[in-house]
Length: 620
Image (cartoon, rainbow, N blue to C red; front, side, top):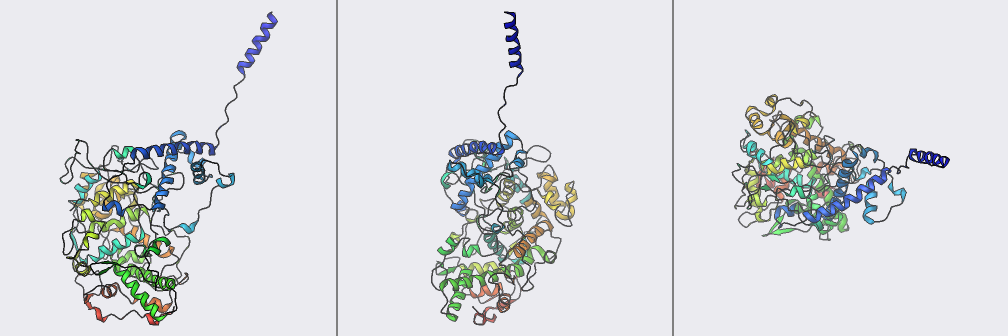
């Protein structure tokens, strides 16, 4: 009996002291797939809650995502939620452990509900040919981001604790009172309009959508709690224009929908460009073959003309058709597509020449033109395949939005509230304000250097909020990357660049100099170059971007080695055809124009003094 008990005790001790077999540790790919499955469920549920559509208006229509962007958002939202779950459950270091896995392939497998072959799960190589193409990511001049959580949350935290001021409060405090000259007497309103034209060519970041492409209702302050794709702007309690409370006595907000998240892998939120990133007249020819086809007549290389009250819009379409007709007459055996492509090639070259020779020097100044070698010189071999030509988020969200501050709120010949139609111009094509009348007004009216709120859209507040929702760095951090500038420790240290009056406004608005939004700092900076409109930070970001366009575009008009490169005869013809001549030849009733189309009150030239474009001397 004792022996039996002894054996029993020994056996029990041995059994108790033997560790239970542990469960095998999850592999990185298992960790990823578990997080992805949960992310898909979470995002689909959030879409059901936050998917209420709002009434369509002109602004929403102009920010509408196409089918490709909507699909990109679907992937981006799943990737973002997967990233959040992974970091929350495993720490930020988990992302480095997953770098060798193609997260996009894994997500596609999850969405298809069946496994992919193992070989397809290896990291795919980045195809640099996609850089700058439609639907590709916008780059970051600063490299990283300033999202509050490091990967998605709108920047709201102030440097010293608490929250940043509402961007509407920033607009009220600074832009309504800022010491900025109201007008720049050197230039007319064409300068602003041409800048807007360029912006609509090189970038279009569509707004996020709800299920089935429905517009998100981001008008309520609470909407940001329902979906990460809303970033409404709080109306301060002392606002003199917008209601501060809703009908049910809650905090009022200005609607703002975040830009579509188009990230294709794990990590921070990324914005995409629905246009191509190049200076290629996307706003005339479209950014895809499908859109381009819809804009053509299919005969003689002609574009379909939009006609309103007998006027053809816009002038560049009219010039395309005129040149196409000349080519057809000179070479009647050419196909419709050949005539179209040859005309398009010449039109894009002309446009790029106008941008670099007539527009850009006035914005960034001659110093930056020289520093970045932007002045047109002739046919070159400067194309560099290693340069990323994509637009930067700092450029398109802050620096190149300076043109919004130049917008007036009335138009020639008719009273239109631009607050409701700021991005939707059909109401402006009125019989009382013909294209000729508006063109005449644009070249005779001086341009605004800055314009505070004068309508139902606070573009300043929206632009500042755009910077925060896209996670761009604040002004003080960006200026530290600009040659000749550095970060500062106090507001007063900005006196040389911004001026005492504006520094006092900054002190009243921000708790720390490190909180100043990039858009605000750029607009308040004084121009250090007398030939520039902008200060050193804005000028540098813009010059850097246009240098990337020039050297990173294989088809740039100055490149002598690109497919379809200009001949010397063609190049000479292009650089002898000014923007003033383009306006003259395509505007009814125009008899004379400033030689420099952007100069207010400059010497005028009779339109009949311009030499016709020498199409007959060009070889096709």
